[in-house]
Length: 390
Ligand SMILES: Cc1cc2nc3c(=O)[nH]c(=O)nc-3n(C[C@H](O)[C@H](O)[C@H](O)COP(=O)(O)O)c2cc1C
Image (cartoon, rainbow, N blue to C red; front, top):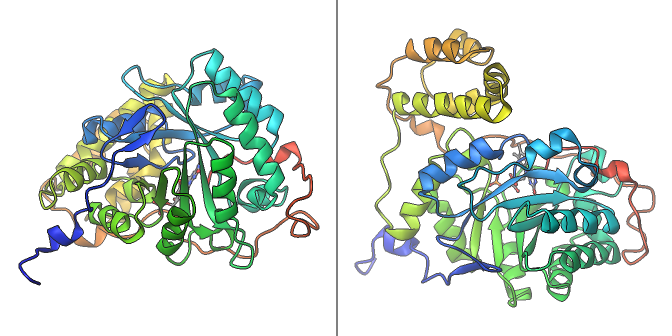
């Protein structure tokens, strides 16, 4: 290969600095918002591995719950004192409520960056015209963005979306243009339609097309980054300005350390952890959750969902796996983790896809939704009732 190593080929071609308003994100790596996952403890873990580099977005917060000061929502918007910039993701379907939520964030100094979610494919949400069904109604999207940007003051507003409803109803190029016109700072594209849910592979060509379509603002690529090299490949293949990493870091928060290394000194990948190191991260994750929730047992119970991701591929045994996933105290976790062979190396087959991979079925939409993309649609407020994300 004319003396070029694989690393040279993978290295991004001098990526420009990613700027999200006043915030420089270097390397240009973003933790994807994931409902039920990217709370303050998980963000802390990821940031510890990245050395504080990158941008770490909160779980999705519904605007109605925020303006109503719902107790659980007020807990979700908590940032650790060390988090900077504080990045919050909002989801809302009503322009006025979105505007009020943004205004509240500004007035009460609750965050430094606001991302808006237009990617949720869950039937309960799309059935009401919310989530990834919403950008089909161009004027509604525009109204929401106008209210958000108009109330944001100096805070940058970004959006995250899918390609569209299905292959016959793509919305991402129009949405990107509307975003530019309304003063949105950056757009992130998950290269799947709502119809795909998490099935198949993400369409990175669509990310490249969006980048060409909206050269005025940074475009962030999202979908199927399972290891640090995938991030570099996406940057090269699409010309995007940064990457958004979701499922690849489930049970693998050290991926952010790998990403920083890959961007800063290609070829210098940190060694994959052995089981002892993974067990130490698990313990810390559970402990942080308990501190955040103010109750050890609640923390360990919340941690249960992470167990299959952390232990994927290791020789744990079904009984211990079950015991870990039903533990209620840190002492129980310690006992079960301590009984396992700590020297097990990282299993090669633990790389690759993890988390949700199911394909979708038909996208459920309100009656007549696909009629006029420019009518004055208003989804009912219960389009915000689901909190399972994107
Ligand atoms: C458990 C889970 C929760 C998610 N929650 C959200 C969310 O709250 N907001 C959002 O914009 N996307 C959400 N997503 C979508 C991810 O942010 C991301 O777009 C998607 O997983 C594709 O990226 P990946 O291939 O890197 O995982 C969620 C995904 C998962 C797996």
